[in-house]
Length: 115
Length: 111
Image 1: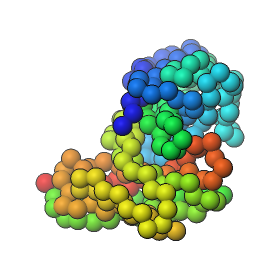
Image 2 (image 1 turned 90 degrees about the horizontal axis):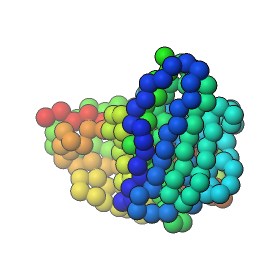
Image 3 (image 1 turned 30 degrees about the vertical axis):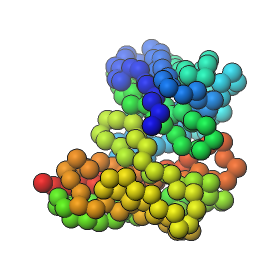
Image 4 (image 1 turned 30 degrees about the horizontal axis):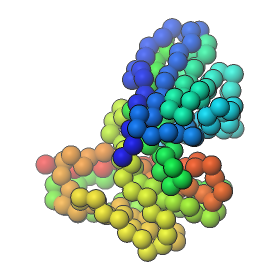
């Protein structure tokens, strides 16, 4: 399978600060990357879809000014949680689409805790 | 609206006790049904893709099947290392590779 690397694996920050999470496809080019959020014992909730070189498309209810997504290259997408608050604490997972099979390959996830 | 329902929510098996997980779906123009395995604190690991009714795929002790309304993940003679949450997802027709996920089935295999 394809490899997606996500960093950091976990981060603790103070309320009001910003946190950046990186997602890299290591052995394939991901034209499209997706960012998900997962609460305990819940399924993955799609936050946004990012395409290389263009603006991300956000799902309904996701604040685009709070969750900044940049897809600078075919192997790198970043999610920045701006002015984080405790309610932003969650497990964030990125994924990349390889080819046109529709198969998504996921990163290891990033656990964000906002104090 | 596309929906994916997985059952049961949780399943406990003894090692060697075979069983099946269910994924029922309603989707406009299915372009793929996906099974993933997720370990605690980790991202989902890709298992299978099924595209059309009647299709089957196997990997070690796992076998996935697909009908027009549901998919089954059969686990034969499971081992404790098969313990994980198994997620089912569908890709609707016309989607930009967006997947709709079910809530998953938490499988625990006791030695």
